[in-house]
Image (cartoon, rainbow, N blue to C red; front, top):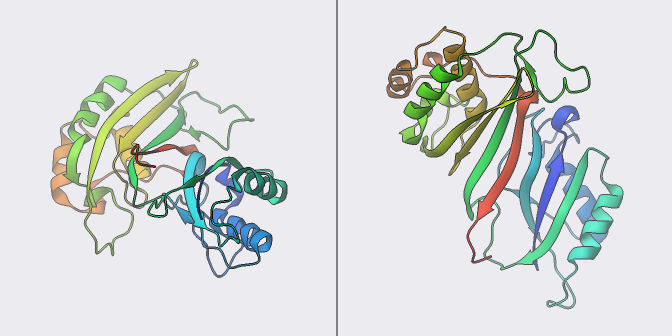
Length: 253
C-alpha cells in the first residue's frame, strides 16, 4: 500500500530533509526509524524535495510503501497517530492517506511554493528570530518587483544553483514571485514553480535583496541568467527565513 503524508517541521535543529549516514538529525531519517519500528520492515520515505539544514516546512509531502496482510486495509489514521506519538515536537504529520501505487511525491509534483521571510526593522522579534532573516534595513519593493519579472518564466537557472557540479538540466519554470509586506517592517517573498534547484530560492532571495538595497539593478537579472555562473548572482540568504509552503499535484491522485 502506498501512503502519502503531509508534514510540518521546524528545521532549526536538523541537518535537512535527506537521510545522512553520519547523523540522525534529519527529517527523513526520523520518519523512517519510526515507520520501520511500527511495521517491522525497512521503510524508505520519499520526499517531494530536499530541504536544506535549517529550512522549515508547512506542507512537505512524502510517500512510502508498506506491505500489508490485507492489501485493501486503509491504515492511514493508525499510521498518523502512531508516528505523531513518537516524532519529536518539532515535526508533525498533518495528514495521511492512501494513494495509487504509481504516485511519487517528487516525480508526481506539478508545482511547489516556497516563502521567504525577511525582517527589515532594526531588531528582530526575539521570539521569531529562528523564522526570519534579520536584514535590518528597508528595501525598494518597486525595484525588486521589476527584477522579479525578469526571473519569472522558463529559464536556465544555473547562476542560481548552489551545486556547482550539477550534471542534470538546470532549466526550471517559475510561475510567479510575489511580495507581501507584513506588519510594520516584515516582508514575505513567495515563489511558485515546477521545481527548484539546490539553494535556488535562497540565492534568488539574496539577489533580490541586493536589488532592493541598490547593489544590483533590476535589468541585471537577464545578464545573470545568461552568465550561467553562480558568481554572477547575489548572496545565499540564510536558511532560517525559508519555508516550503505547499506542494501541488494533479487530480489523478
